[in-house]
Length: 337
Image (tube, rainbow, N blue to C red; front, side, top):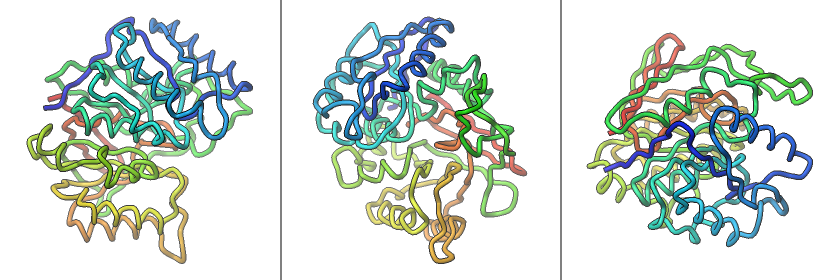
Protein backbone atom coordinates (compact mmCIF):
# COMPACT_ATOMS: atom_id res chain seq x y z
CA UNK A 1 0.00 0.00 0.00
CA UNK A 2 1.44 3.36 -1.04
CA UNK A 3 0.97 6.29 1.33
CA UNK A 4 0.66 9.76 -0.18
CA UNK A 5 1.59 12.99 1.61
CA UNK A 6 -0.46 16.07 0.74
CA UNK A 7 0.66 19.64 0.19
CA UNK A 8 -1.61 22.12 1.96
CA UNK A 9 -1.95 25.88 1.69
CA UNK A 10 0.65 27.65 3.77
CA UNK A 11 2.84 24.57 4.06
CA UNK A 12 6.29 25.17 5.50
CA UNK A 13 9.10 24.19 3.15
CA UNK A 14 12.24 22.73 4.67
CA UNK A 15 15.32 23.31 2.55
CA UNK A 16 18.27 21.08 3.37
CA UNK A 17 21.20 19.98 1.22
CA UNK A 18 21.65 16.20 1.44
CA UNK A 19 23.92 16.45 -1.61
CA UNK A 20 25.32 19.84 -2.71
CA UNK A 21 24.88 23.13 -0.91
CA UNK A 22 25.02 26.64 -2.33
CA UNK A 23 28.37 28.33 -2.95
CA UNK A 24 28.76 31.81 -1.35
CA UNK A 25 28.66 33.58 -4.72
CA UNK A 26 25.22 32.06 -5.38
CA UNK A 27 23.66 32.85 -2.00
CA UNK A 28 21.77 35.84 -3.39
CA UNK A 29 20.20 33.66 -6.08
CA UNK A 30 19.13 31.14 -3.47
CA UNK A 31 17.72 33.88 -1.21
CA UNK A 32 15.63 35.03 -4.18
CA UNK A 33 14.00 31.57 -4.27
CA UNK A 34 13.23 31.90 -0.55
CA UNK A 35 11.63 35.31 -1.11
CA UNK A 36 9.48 33.99 -3.97
CA UNK A 37 8.34 31.08 -1.84
CA UNK A 38 7.33 33.37 1.01
CA UNK A 39 5.45 35.60 -1.44
CA UNK A 40 3.50 32.58 -2.66
CA UNK A 41 2.47 31.70 0.89
CA UNK A 42 5.03 29.00 1.67
CA UNK A 43 7.25 29.85 4.67
CA UNK A 44 10.81 28.54 4.36
CA UNK A 45 13.08 26.97 6.97
CA UNK A 46 16.68 26.57 5.80
CA UNK A 47 19.14 24.11 7.28
CA UNK A 48 22.77 24.98 7.86
CA UNK A 49 23.91 22.67 5.07
CA UNK A 50 22.31 24.93 2.47
CA UNK A 51 24.94 27.63 2.91
CA UNK A 52 28.11 25.57 2.53
CA UNK A 53 29.79 23.64 -0.29
CA UNK A 54 33.24 22.05 -0.47
CA UNK A 55 34.75 18.83 -1.82
CA UNK A 56 31.65 18.07 -3.92
CA UNK A 57 29.24 18.15 -0.97
CA UNK A 58 27.53 20.53 1.41
CA UNK A 59 28.96 18.91 4.55
CA UNK A 60 30.24 15.63 5.96
CA UNK A 61 27.86 12.73 5.40
CA UNK A 62 26.93 12.50 9.10
CA UNK A 63 25.98 16.19 9.16
CA UNK A 64 23.87 15.98 6.01
CA UNK A 65 22.08 12.86 7.22
CA UNK A 66 21.41 14.29 10.67
CA UNK A 67 19.86 17.45 9.25
CA UNK A 68 17.71 15.54 6.76
CA UNK A 69 16.52 13.10 9.46
CA UNK A 70 15.65 16.01 11.73
CA UNK A 71 13.56 17.72 9.05
CA UNK A 72 11.78 14.47 8.23
CA UNK A 73 10.90 14.09 11.90
CA UNK A 74 9.90 17.74 12.47
CA UNK A 75 6.13 18.22 12.67
CA UNK A 76 6.53 21.90 11.79
CA UNK A 77 8.04 21.14 8.38
CA UNK A 78 5.53 19.95 5.78
CA UNK A 79 7.63 19.36 2.65
CA UNK A 80 11.34 19.11 1.91
CA UNK A 81 12.80 20.57 -1.29
CA UNK A 82 16.62 20.55 -1.55
CA UNK A 83 18.22 23.53 -3.32
CA UNK A 84 19.35 21.24 -6.17
CA UNK A 85 21.15 17.96 -6.78
CA UNK A 86 24.87 17.30 -6.68
CA UNK A 87 27.25 14.36 -6.75
CA UNK A 88 27.53 12.07 -3.71
CA UNK A 89 24.24 11.98 -1.83
CA UNK A 90 24.63 8.19 -1.70
CA UNK A 91 27.18 8.69 1.11
CA UNK A 92 24.34 9.38 3.56
CA UNK A 93 22.10 6.44 2.63
CA UNK A 94 23.14 4.14 5.49
CA UNK A 95 22.79 7.02 7.96
CA UNK A 96 19.13 7.78 7.25
CA UNK A 97 16.49 6.76 9.80
CA UNK A 98 13.76 5.69 7.37
CA UNK A 99 11.59 4.25 10.15
CA UNK A 100 11.25 7.68 11.78
CA UNK A 101 10.22 9.58 8.64
CA UNK A 102 6.90 11.37 8.94
CA UNK A 103 4.53 11.49 6.00
CA UNK A 104 5.63 14.51 3.96
CA UNK A 105 6.68 15.17 0.39
CA UNK A 106 10.31 15.19 -0.67
CA UNK A 107 10.69 16.90 -4.07
CA UNK A 108 13.73 17.13 -6.33
CA UNK A 109 15.74 15.48 -9.09
CA UNK A 110 19.28 14.70 -10.26
CA UNK A 111 21.34 13.37 -7.31
CA UNK A 112 18.24 13.77 -5.11
CA UNK A 113 16.54 10.98 -7.05
CA UNK A 114 18.56 8.29 -5.26
CA UNK A 115 17.06 9.57 -2.00
CA UNK A 116 13.56 9.68 -3.50
CA UNK A 117 13.67 6.16 -4.89
CA UNK A 118 15.22 4.66 -1.76
CA UNK A 119 12.62 6.36 0.46
CA UNK A 120 9.72 4.98 -1.57
CA UNK A 121 11.23 1.48 -1.75
CA UNK A 122 12.05 1.38 1.98
CA UNK A 123 8.90 3.01 3.38
CA UNK A 124 6.14 2.73 0.76
CA UNK A 125 5.72 6.51 0.93
CA UNK A 126 5.37 8.33 -2.38
CA UNK A 127 8.11 10.80 -3.34
CA UNK A 128 8.16 13.46 -6.06
CA UNK A 129 10.62 13.75 -8.94
CA UNK A 130 10.42 17.30 -10.27
CA UNK A 131 11.69 20.83 -9.88
CA UNK A 132 14.35 21.80 -7.40
CA UNK A 133 14.02 24.75 -5.06
CA UNK A 134 16.39 27.19 -6.78
CA UNK A 135 14.44 26.94 -10.05
CA UNK A 136 11.37 28.36 -8.29
CA UNK A 137 13.01 31.76 -7.93
CA UNK A 138 11.35 33.32 -11.01
CA UNK A 139 8.54 35.86 -11.00
CA UNK A 140 6.36 32.97 -12.13
CA UNK A 141 6.80 29.42 -13.41
CA UNK A 142 6.06 27.98 -16.83
CA UNK A 143 2.88 25.87 -16.99
CA UNK A 144 4.73 22.54 -16.83
CA UNK A 145 6.92 23.39 -13.83
CA UNK A 146 4.07 25.11 -11.98
CA UNK A 147 2.11 21.85 -11.86
CA UNK A 148 4.22 20.65 -8.93
CA UNK A 149 1.84 22.41 -6.54
CA UNK A 150 -1.32 20.85 -8.00
CA UNK A 151 0.26 17.41 -8.22
CA UNK A 152 1.45 17.44 -4.61
CA UNK A 153 -1.94 18.80 -3.48
CA UNK A 154 -3.79 15.83 -4.96
CA UNK A 155 -5.87 13.98 -2.38
CA UNK A 156 -5.30 10.27 -1.88
CA UNK A 157 -7.76 8.33 -4.04
CA UNK A 158 -7.89 11.03 -6.73
CA UNK A 159 -6.02 11.58 -10.02
CA UNK A 160 -4.09 14.45 -11.59
CA UNK A 161 -3.38 15.07 -15.28
CA UNK A 162 -0.33 16.75 -16.80
CA UNK A 163 0.51 17.43 -20.44
CA UNK A 164 3.73 17.72 -22.40
CA UNK A 165 5.24 21.19 -22.55
CA UNK A 166 4.94 23.36 -25.65
CA UNK A 167 8.65 24.18 -25.67
CA UNK A 168 11.82 23.25 -23.82
CA UNK A 169 15.13 24.90 -22.98
CA UNK A 170 18.08 23.82 -25.13
CA UNK A 171 20.80 25.75 -23.33
CA UNK A 172 21.15 27.81 -20.15
CA UNK A 173 21.52 31.56 -20.61
CA UNK A 174 22.49 32.96 -17.21
CA UNK A 175 23.57 36.28 -18.73
CA UNK A 176 19.99 37.11 -19.76
CA UNK A 177 17.62 36.57 -16.87
CA UNK A 178 14.11 35.36 -17.60
CA UNK A 179 11.04 36.00 -15.40
CA UNK A 180 10.30 32.26 -15.64
CA UNK A 181 13.97 31.23 -15.08
CA UNK A 182 14.01 28.91 -18.11
CA UNK A 183 14.45 30.08 -21.72
CA UNK A 184 11.98 27.87 -23.57
CA UNK A 185 12.86 28.01 -27.26
CA UNK A 186 12.69 24.49 -28.78
CA UNK A 187 9.59 22.59 -29.82
CA UNK A 188 8.78 19.71 -27.47
CA UNK A 189 8.09 16.30 -28.99
CA UNK A 190 7.46 13.14 -26.98
CA UNK A 191 8.54 10.19 -29.10
CA UNK A 192 7.94 6.46 -29.49
CA UNK A 193 9.75 3.71 -31.35
CA UNK A 194 6.58 2.43 -32.98
CA UNK A 195 4.63 5.00 -34.97
CA UNK A 196 3.06 8.15 -33.61
CA UNK A 197 0.98 6.58 -30.82
CA UNK A 198 1.78 4.68 -27.63
CA UNK A 199 0.21 4.17 -24.23
CA UNK A 200 1.87 2.78 -21.10
CA UNK A 201 0.43 1.93 -17.69
CA UNK A 202 1.98 0.91 -14.41
CA UNK A 203 3.37 1.98 -11.04
CA UNK A 204 5.95 4.71 -11.50
CA UNK A 205 9.48 4.30 -10.25
CA UNK A 206 12.68 5.91 -11.45
CA UNK A 207 14.97 8.91 -11.41
CA UNK A 208 18.35 9.99 -12.72
CA UNK A 209 19.77 6.76 -14.13
CA UNK A 210 23.37 7.87 -13.49
CA UNK A 211 22.56 7.86 -9.77
CA UNK A 212 19.87 5.30 -9.02
CA UNK A 213 21.86 2.52 -10.69
CA UNK A 214 24.09 2.56 -7.61
CA UNK A 215 21.22 1.19 -5.51
CA UNK A 216 21.40 -2.13 -7.36
CA UNK A 217 22.41 -4.90 -4.97
CA UNK A 218 21.99 -2.73 -1.86
CA UNK A 219 19.29 -2.84 0.85
CA UNK A 220 17.93 0.41 -0.64
CA UNK A 221 17.16 -1.01 -4.08
CA UNK A 222 14.99 -4.03 -3.25
CA UNK A 223 12.49 -3.80 -6.11
CA UNK A 224 10.94 -7.23 -5.57
CA UNK A 225 10.12 -6.62 -1.92
CA UNK A 226 8.55 -3.29 -2.81
CA UNK A 227 6.43 -4.84 -5.55
CA UNK A 228 5.19 -7.59 -3.25
CA UNK A 229 4.61 -5.57 -0.09
CA UNK A 230 3.61 -2.11 -1.38
CA UNK A 231 1.92 -2.49 -4.79
CA UNK A 232 0.43 -6.00 -4.75
CA UNK A 233 2.83 -7.21 -7.47
CA UNK A 234 1.55 -4.67 -10.00
CA UNK A 235 3.86 -4.00 -12.98
CA UNK A 236 6.35 -1.15 -12.73
CA UNK A 237 6.52 1.66 -15.27
CA UNK A 238 10.11 2.88 -15.12
CA UNK A 239 11.14 6.44 -15.92
CA UNK A 240 14.76 7.45 -16.39
CA UNK A 241 16.61 10.64 -17.19
CA UNK A 242 20.26 10.74 -18.20
CA UNK A 243 22.56 13.48 -16.95
CA UNK A 244 26.02 12.45 -18.12
CA UNK A 245 26.14 8.91 -19.56
CA UNK A 246 27.23 8.27 -23.12
CA UNK A 247 25.38 5.60 -25.07
CA UNK A 248 27.60 2.66 -24.17
CA UNK A 249 27.53 3.54 -20.46
CA UNK A 250 23.75 3.89 -20.67
CA UNK A 251 23.58 0.49 -22.38
CA UNK A 252 25.75 -1.13 -19.70
CA UNK A 253 23.55 0.36 -16.98
CA UNK A 254 20.34 -0.91 -18.55
CA UNK A 255 21.85 -4.39 -18.94
CA UNK A 256 22.93 -4.33 -15.30
CA UNK A 257 19.35 -3.44 -14.31
CA UNK A 258 18.07 -6.32 -16.41
CA UNK A 259 20.55 -8.78 -14.89
CA UNK A 260 19.54 -7.54 -11.42
CA UNK A 261 15.89 -8.29 -12.31
CA UNK A 262 14.82 -4.67 -12.03
CA UNK A 263 12.81 -5.11 -15.23
CA UNK A 264 10.90 -8.18 -14.05
CA UNK A 265 7.16 -7.48 -14.20
CA UNK A 266 7.74 -4.19 -16.04
CA UNK A 267 5.08 -2.64 -18.28
CA UNK A 268 7.29 -0.11 -20.08
CA UNK A 269 10.09 2.44 -19.86
CA UNK A 270 10.00 6.19 -20.45
CA UNK A 271 13.14 8.28 -20.93
CA UNK A 272 13.52 12.00 -20.40
CA UNK A 273 15.15 14.46 -22.78
CA UNK A 274 18.90 14.59 -22.39
CA UNK A 275 21.86 16.63 -23.54
CA UNK A 276 24.06 13.63 -22.74
CA UNK A 277 23.56 10.37 -24.73
CA UNK A 278 26.77 10.98 -26.69
CA UNK A 279 27.04 8.55 -29.60
CA UNK A 280 29.91 6.04 -29.33
CA UNK A 281 31.24 4.46 -32.55
CA UNK A 282 27.98 5.00 -34.43
CA UNK A 283 25.94 3.55 -31.54
CA UNK A 284 23.31 6.20 -30.90
CA UNK A 285 20.70 6.47 -28.18
CA UNK A 286 17.76 5.43 -30.35
CA UNK A 287 19.59 2.17 -30.99
CA UNK A 288 19.97 1.75 -27.22
CA UNK A 289 16.23 2.22 -26.83
CA UNK A 290 15.47 -0.21 -29.67
CA UNK A 291 17.73 -2.86 -28.15
CA UNK A 292 15.97 -2.55 -24.79
CA UNK A 293 12.50 -2.63 -26.33
CA UNK A 294 13.30 -5.79 -28.26
CA UNK A 295 14.95 -7.56 -25.34
CA UNK A 296 12.22 -6.78 -22.81
CA UNK A 297 9.33 -6.86 -25.30
CA UNK A 298 7.84 -3.72 -23.77
CA UNK A 299 6.97 -0.28 -25.22
CA UNK A 300 9.32 2.66 -24.80
CA UNK A 301 8.60 6.39 -24.88
CA UNK A 302 11.40 8.93 -24.93
CA UNK A 303 12.24 12.64 -24.88
CA UNK A 304 9.55 13.34 -22.30
CA UNK A 305 9.67 16.40 -20.00
CA UNK A 306 11.87 14.92 -17.30
CA UNK A 307 15.30 15.80 -16.01
CA UNK A 308 18.15 18.16 -16.80
CA UNK A 309 16.64 19.69 -19.96
CA UNK A 310 13.73 21.70 -18.49
CA UNK A 311 10.87 22.04 -17.99
CA UNK A 312 9.75 18.80 -16.42
CA UNK A 313 6.52 17.22 -15.30
CA UNK A 314 6.21 16.08 -11.69
CA UNK A 315 6.49 12.29 -11.49
CA UNK A 316 5.39 10.47 -8.34
CA UNK A 317 7.26 7.37 -7.28
CA UNK A 318 4.63 4.81 -6.33
CA UNK A 319 1.65 6.38 -8.15
CA UNK A 320 -0.30 4.46 -10.77
CA UNK A 321 0.31 6.19 -14.07
CA UNK A 322 -1.07 6.16 -17.59
CA UNK A 323 1.19 7.79 -20.17
CA UNK A 324 -0.09 8.46 -23.66
CA UNK A 325 1.78 9.85 -26.66
CA UNK A 326 -0.02 10.83 -29.83
CA UNK A 327 1.62 12.71 -32.71
CA UNK A 328 4.37 14.09 -30.46
CA UNK A 329 2.04 15.32 -27.71
CA UNK A 330 2.04 13.69 -24.30
CA UNK A 331 -0.49 13.14 -21.55
CA UNK A 332 0.29 11.83 -18.06
CA UNK A 333 -2.43 10.79 -15.61
CA UNK A 334 -1.31 9.79 -12.11
CA UNK A 335 -3.67 8.14 -9.65
CA UNK A 336 -2.95 8.31 -5.93
CA UNK A 337 -4.27 4.92 -4.89
